[in-house]
Image (cartoon, rainbow, N blue to C red; front, side, top):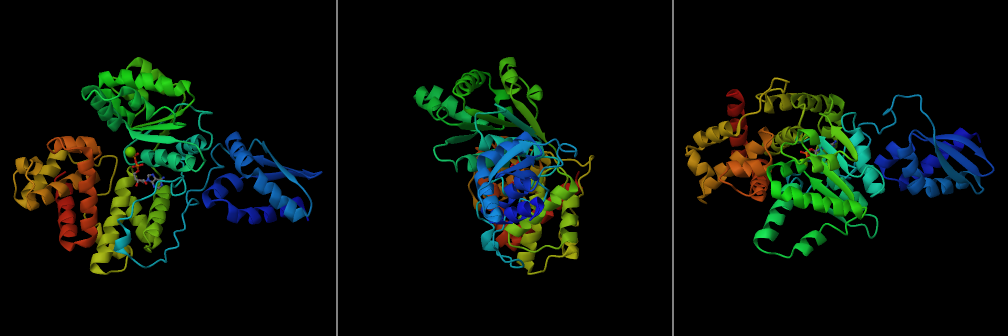
Length: 453
Ligand code: ADP
Ligand code: MG
């Protein structure tokens, strides 16, 4: 048996033991270099792959090669310079697909409310996000070792929170590893509460220290609060000194966060900074495919391509369009094909570099007019049913159509808490899928808003 065949056969043996996305991104790029005296040397395209394979899969691979050869063999991994351009070795865009086992073609609206899991496995890797993905995976695998802090930045809806939660999900599989995830705005709120309510400060710190990884999402929120910057700085230093891995996400690079103290900025710039760019068409397509599959719906390629052409720089909006198509298919009991998708999305303005995001006021005015209520009522305190409904729809549209964060939307609706906004969005998402009236209201409102731009 030639070495090539030995290697291929061994790979087939280990394949079922390794998660598909890891197999595609870490194992497939390996080459068998030599096999002598029971030592099987394989080449990895970079040290990142080498480290992961050596720590996780070398034993498994050794066992498989031994099995195939019929005598003991040990797999040793080294780095080989690859002739390909950097990045050529990354997982192909559609490899990390999760097999949910759902039969295709069946649309089950009851399924759609299920909480989405944010994992590396269901994160589609493309050119736009591969550096962020690999850096995040590295932290999940080897917390506290390289790239501390890791700073991930990129526009809204491009997967920052997804990656942070994937680190948590992944790292927590290792026994005794504790991971803390926090929205920076909640961190600030909580800290202010400890000051004003004279709560125990030590127990505040305790929630953060003693974690191997601490993930601060949306650290641009620090810009508005001078007092908490000092607190954050101290905590950062404490964590760093105790070798906790600190991961930060932001909608912009550290240099562009306004009113950030120089000392915090230089901490943010001290480790590795990676950006996430808007995804290219193929990546958008792969994301839609994975989502359709997870939702248990079958959507032909040309229809997916049409949806992918409508949104370029926000994956949340992209998913929103697919949701709209699926909702319509469920409500009207139609098959999803290109014609149907074109019809459902006919008034969806294709995003271009020039396309405009509607201002929150425009959404509020349109919604108030539509439901024949006053703007003051829309953002006011009344809990009367029609007002609550209009308010929830308006918040949902702000979330879907603008870049505004939950916090800022809450602010624009009479200073409501971001959890209220999130609740409203979830509520309306659910209604769209189950109530034809709401579906039609939201479709009509979206079109009205788009036409006013
Ligand atoms: P951000 O935090 O950058 O605003 P999120 O992490 O909330 O963005 O992502 C928005 C939505 O897009 C989420 O539902 C997320 O799962 C999805 N998403 C983003 N990037 C990817 C990706 N590469 N693969 C699959 N889903 C993605
Ligand atoms: Mg986020």
